[in-house]
Image 1 (tube, rainbow, N blue to C red):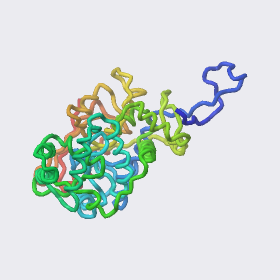
Image 2 (image 1 turned 90 degrees about the vertical axis):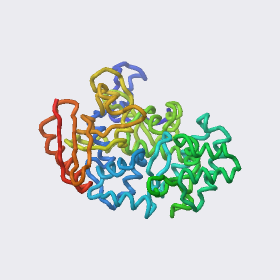
Image 3 (image 1 turned 120 degrees about the vertical axis):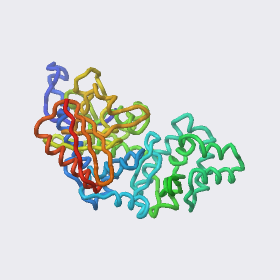
Image 4 (image 1 turned 180 degrees about the vertical axis):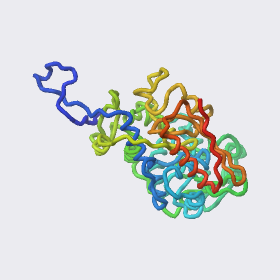
Length: 403
């Protein structure tokens, strides 16, 4: 890779007399405590944003995982003071400044509408890279879906029928009507489909070009991928190629190329002795970061958890490569069929799970730590649970289990 390493001090780690006695520059080394605190600040988990910053938060987070829409609302509430559920729904379906579609990794996301062109330019490369998306049938179906959705809001059944009429093919109609969205994802990647407001229990789709007030103007694909890599590092760094690969949905080799394309915009640093990548102009900010005691309750599918560093040395103790989660609890967080648990976050580390249930005016919140928690965390945990109750407009019943 061509990115530079910043010379922090003149130290030759090997102690040898190579290079005619000249000392080689050392990389910046920080602790994971610093790195996690820096990530929390970048993700508005230290100082929360205001309601006026809703779109800016979504853009900084590189969108929000929207497999379950309530997770989007709760993820934003964890980062924005005073946010209401109605404000999120209004931004999606009335003001149309947010947009929901299949995006990274082929999973549902909510993105900023004004930002959509960059994401679509990057997502369009999926059809060049994945074998099943290279099938000409996928492009044909995407085009048919786009034609059917122009200026229209259609349920899945209505969209399938429209595709059947346009193509004069019952087989193509059946493809759209059945499955888990496999034949709709290419249309989403190619900018031919996004979600509209539901109708009763039915999901509806429409076309981004006729639904959004701000038309998307995609840049060149390579330019878009470089911008996407920068955005990822700016909020989820320090990161390794495997982290970018897991989030974007590509190979480590391709992720390395995405980072390499940034040239001197990125640099290598060491986090507890292991190499990671970071935007060069953010290194000083990271180096000056001081860890602070902070507790947060993050919902299922939260971006903090989805984008957590995936390098793992194995074993049962946390350390370099698994800084945010003791690997003994990995299956409690990253569950079967792609489900991601709601977590108790303490100083950037996942220290437990939680769940909630709303019954009338009562919100029951049950928190299960993985071990004994520091005494100072008790009141911040209560405050976080109280914020949830206010968000739902309920009275709180909190249960904190102990081991």
